[in-house]
Amino acid sequence: MTNFLRKYRPFVSAGIEEAIVYRANFLLFALGNTLGAFVTYFLWKAVFQSSTNSSLNGFTFPEMVLYIFLSFFTGILTSSDGSSSVGDEVKDGSIAMRILKPISFTANYFYEEIGSKLIDVGVLAVPLFGGILIYQIVGKGTPVLNLVNLLLYFFSATVAYLINFYFNICFSFTAFFFRNLWGSNVLKNALVIFMSGSLVPLAFFPPVLQNVLKVLPFSSLLYTPVMLYLGKYSAEQTISVLLLQIFWLIFFIFLAKIIWHFAIKHLSIQGG
Amino acid sequence: MRRVLHLEKIFISQYLKQTMEYKADFIVGVLGVLLNQVLNLIFLQVIFSQVPKLAGWSLQQIVFIYGFALIPKGLDHLFFDNLWIVGQKLVRKGEFDKYLTRPINPLFHVLVETFQVDAFGELLVGVILLVMSSATVHWTLLKVILFIVSIPFATAIYTALKIGTSAAAFWMKKSNTITYLFYMFNDFAKYPVSIFNHLIRWIISFIIPFAFTAFYPASYFLTGKNVLFNLGGLVVISIVFLFIAIKIWNKGISSYESAGS
Image (tube, each protein chain N blue to C red):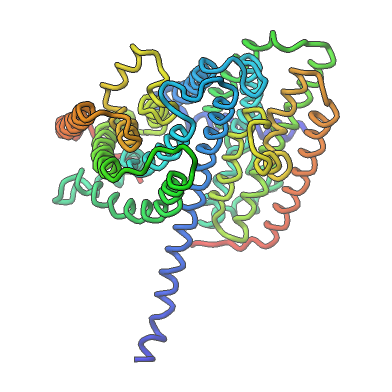
């Protein structure tokens, strides 16, 4: 038994080391991205200090702080990496291996992503979401922690992740036509960040633009769960935004099926 | 010097050929980079629709600082982006060997090898913003000269931080996340330092001195004040950081062990 342990212990510690290195990298990346949220925080702080009003477009400063960090956390929670990996796999041809397997292409990606996402979110939830909760409990003038809103948030964020997953799968099929996906990814990300409300709460836009953006699928990705958490919606509004989310989810599931049907005929595998 | 320029030209044309292989994607990407900047400006516009002045600065002035920030960032991105790859995979996969076997300085070779054309998005927006907001600056001949001189020094701060942090890969095999963490501090440089708390102000001034790549020099051009700190500081900081970065790099190269197969 001791012999057995001595023989295999190096493998275990190598595995642990590898996992730690990988997570350390992930944490450093996440920390780098958090800096952006802090820049936004200081900007809004200066805005609220320069302004004579204590609330801007319905947001008090503590609500804005929650919005900034919660939308950052929600962005990580609902992020989906499918489109860039499909692009890479089309580029180096390894996508052929996925298509040859007797399982659904989409499901293959989904389960792969769920695995790493559980760990990533688990690692980040403690410092980030914990920080948000502590701020809400300790901070002055913050909205009261509400269990119903919390549950609505997690439900809505889960639907948001699924919408994002299928949206990215639809989008990734453009790699079959464009080959390389770097450019279209840059363009897509810029638009999504803006239209989902992660840059500025949609309530700060002119009313016409606001109404358009609220109906488009992008607000379902981020704005809806965050606003539900903040308790900004009445019961009626809550039901309608949740129904809208579910509508977009079904829409993208079907769209993914249809595009896949056409895209698969267009695919040309490139060399290694 | 002529040899250096000649080599740079060859490397750039090689790189362009590579990029042009995926032409449609590339054009879409440049549009994306442009759009990203435009959306950030809309963000500023939204902020200024709430207040006339932010910590004492007008929208025009902030636009000038923002535009100034994009020039050194874009130049570094355009010419020296290959440094990311050192920490990402060149060392880890043992591909760094090729730089050591060539008859040119390895650091120079790494620096000139790629030419990141998508940086034109940043540079273009930067120039447009500077032109749009240049009326807020009381230009004199001296200021124009100082402006031109300050750009390469500001760019050197970006490059120095990337050289120093990517050199960490020579010991750690992989260091691109460290470079990323340092690099992300550039977000703070685009706004007046007075909106940040003391700790962050101190970090972006002297530890990861991105404030010298944008806010400090830009505030001299806007107000004409504190030339010694705003521009003198820029020159001193960028020389010191570049010197330290090259020291780290050289030390790293001497302890580089080839990895992989």
